[in-house]
Length: 104
Image (tube, rainbow, N blue to C red; front, top):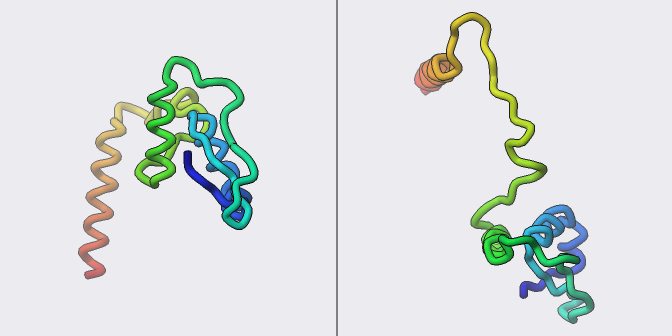
């Protein structure tokens, strides 16, 4: 179980709550003395170990946990006519690399 100081917890409360939702547990301290335990109310569903692994990786700074519902509200980009998104991206990259070279 990881420790978190109250000052740090206040500064990044949303971050720590997301980690707790994923199954992480924290020991809250005041001046190095433990005063509370921060943990999920219910045990996470079937992915308990996986959720804890992701939360641990996030605590170590290796990954950033998603906010919200991920891609559930994702709407694909639609271009007018017969244009393709991939062509638009490639064109944008060509323009960006040309302007970068001109600055050098």
